[in-house]
Length: 245
Image 1 (cartoon, rainbow, N blue to C red):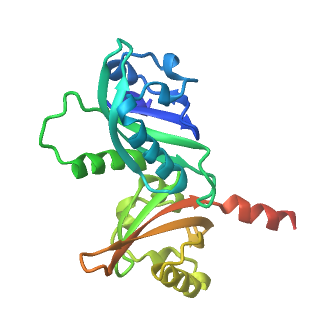
Image 2 (spheres, helix red, strand yellow):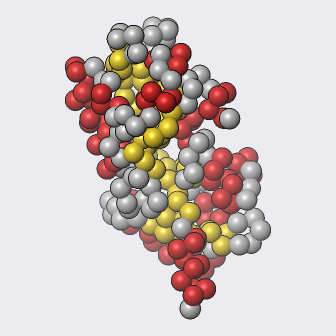
Image 3 (tube, rainbow, N blue to C red):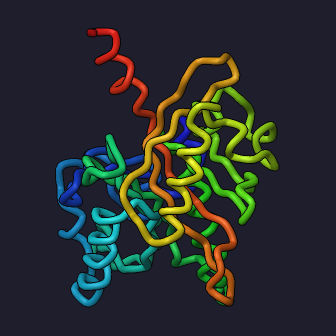
């Protein structure tokens, strides 16, 4: 229902790039019905001159948790090529694992006004992607005060996003784990890249275990100006073993 209310094409692919699902927006953008794309590899439709660029983006999606933005040509049903732009991210059960599927949000650039800067387009597409992710997205400044949380992150905590923005990330970490969380974050700032796990506290008092992948944001002098993280709810993996015991 959500996908019908956006002009961009939303699609889900397996890790190889095969269409698993596609929104109806593929019809006005590419001329295909969703059923004509599902089960087929997206590589069948890429312009030969753009294959290398798209393949590089595919590698970034599978190796990293960041959103990848790429502009390329896709063959329409009538045989012509459409210039399109996709923001994609891998969907993982755990940040340390390779993605099971890929979520993509794609817009048609054929009617795009010239002069629009890519960062503007990329930010807009990123916003659409993070609002659909099951994983949470959390950004902080250099003092660990929240500058952005995605709707999914707010739902994990049982709060509204406006109630979280401006507050320290440590307000949501279990008191017994705050010192360890600070040490882990400092290790990450020094270049240690192993996945982190934090125990957060929801509004209702229940515990929330999350696996976290953090990316530091640097200023023009290469000093840490904050960070952005993707968080995956792993509470079930923590609770079930304890219950079994």
